[in-house]
Amino acid sequence: MVDHGAASRIGVYPGTFDPVTNGHMDIIRRASLLADRLIIAVSTNAGKGPLLTIEERMALMQAELADPRNGLDQKKIELRAFDNLLMHFVEEMGAHFIIRGLRAVSDFEYEFQMAGMNARLDPDVETVFLMASERQQFISSRFIKEIGRLGGRIDEFVSPRVNEHLKRAFQDGR
Image 1 (cartoon, rainbow, N blue to C red):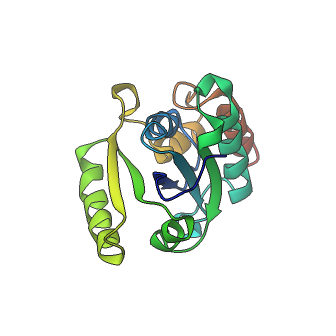
Image 2 (cartoon, rainbow, N blue to C red):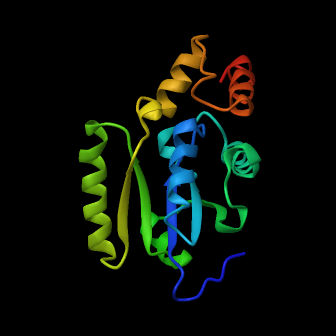
């Protein structure tokens, strides 16, 4: 585990991750280069009506983080679930910044408002925006679920592990 001393740059990448996508993994890879310690924070966020349970989302994310093909430094990354206000969670973790991924201009307005509100709640915590890589710009969990539910191919947007899990979930009538 990383030294969590005062000099450590601790970042939080929050999300529902319902499901975790190749786009999420791209942001995690790149964010891990900015942080000494990166906390992947999976929100329970029942208000979004997730397809997958928090347990499923945590297990899938853990498997993706541990997969050597993703090239992540395991000593730098921690996985946590949270069900409180993001800024409270960030403060509890002693984090210095929040990572947010941007896919398109349409994401920016919402994220800009959220960053402004978070800055009012704790001006010592920065929000860092990472643009989605070109290949990942149009991937969204919502679209993946919609396409998959209707029998479309989603294998280029998620890992084989996530693809199989979603197929089973859709077969179960979710």
